[in-house]
Length: 627
Image (tube, rainbow, N blue to C red; front, side, top):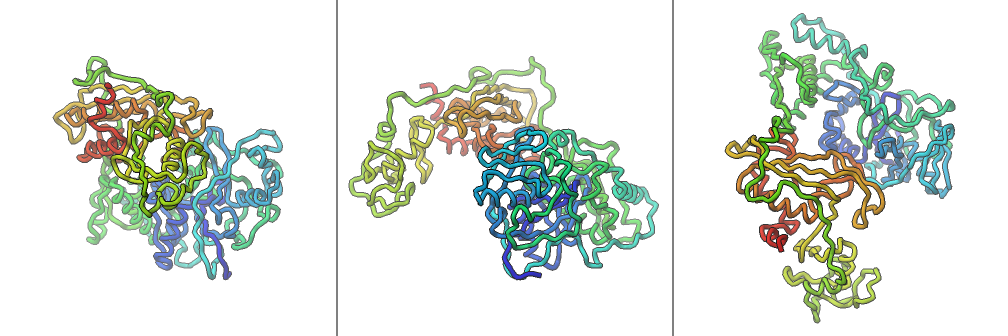
């Protein structure tokens, strides 16, 4: 035990015997659960904080991470680091893998790199800690000392990991209490369900049914360290909790990264040689199995995916335990079914009654449609259109544009300008160079009546799209015609002879968006740099009702104004410089609503009309486009 302050990093053991950190957000979530019930143990559902981790549950008593769809168990631990080190400052060091995405270094490697960076060293050699690489800070590159291959590295800021102060325990990993030891095996039951359970447990214990690592993950393996790399630590190694560790004192490890992984994203299950970080289900006693099964069934129920999982009333003796045992005649191809199957196996192994049926199926696309069945939409011209880039009229300076929307205020009120946060009675606090506008001039927007320094409004306009429009930073009222930065592409729309769930009396409007990858223009975040376009063509669906056609017409206006998509960072994958949706929700699921992006949804059309109105697009906009 040690009395000090430290940052807490929750870590999991991968198949190479290396401890990989969860992201700061996930660590905060786990820590909150631990602090809420420090002695009772319990389970942590990682999907509640990061949708990418939806299959994973952490059992705090056995300190294992459980993957619901494969049954894989991996040890986890609660580790401590110096508050002045990288995790205490929210600094993350990452390297660029072969597919262009960024992978974080192991925590201690990142701490070593950050230590050298703060000392303003021109470079850092990672050989002393077991890696044949040099990090060059001048070029922000990683150089393989053996092959001379170079990769880009980057330093980014994230959330600071949770902080603890007081008496600190050593790093918690493996359970040491006698209660967590495996219980003696009970006499086996010969019923078909128990035979299935025991065969799966035996296969997992011997590694024969371990799912293979997908080929996509194999391609992105990090460079292998050179012959000088030391073997990884033993599982019980304890790190110094609250001491700044220089690069020479960091313990040597085998490798620094997880293949193709992201922050807080557990790895694929190991193959034949991946037994280091894996725990068999057979090593868990009945209590631990019950806890995992109950936690997993709660996840399924909370996520709305438990239609195929029904627990029976408790009690009634051995006959009730196995009745009914309904199993599907064929294995479906949905990942959710694997999750429910593992849940059923766990519940049965733990003595909890269970019945499995087919889960609802995800239906993304309609049945096949021939060309002769595709029709144009009455009242809507054409069946496709391409992006057109509209520019502000030449010769219009920012002052001339704003003059149309402003009224000068000679006696401003004694309140703050919400742009620069200085008093309106004082000069603007904005430090940009605006020589044609006096910093003490004040103006009122004509429609909403909000008052700002004119100097601040000109600066805000110059930092925007410069398309002749202005949006009030307080109430979001739009002056002029707002346009976006959507890259070039094509929008197709037509009728198909199928009905959406909840709209049985009408056909369906299908929209197909196609945007190719390209080079960013001057209006984009990184001009001159390439951008990716994942998931195109994207298919979206509307009911062919009066309101559905109204939404389509306004979506066409939004497309022409380049407001449907933008270039930025994906909230789903974390990839930067990629095409993303731009605050106008679409339904991409045709025949179900398992993801929340499908039908039935009684409020969707009204919600999307409100989102379009927030972008300045209403029924009046169609007339403006014709003008």
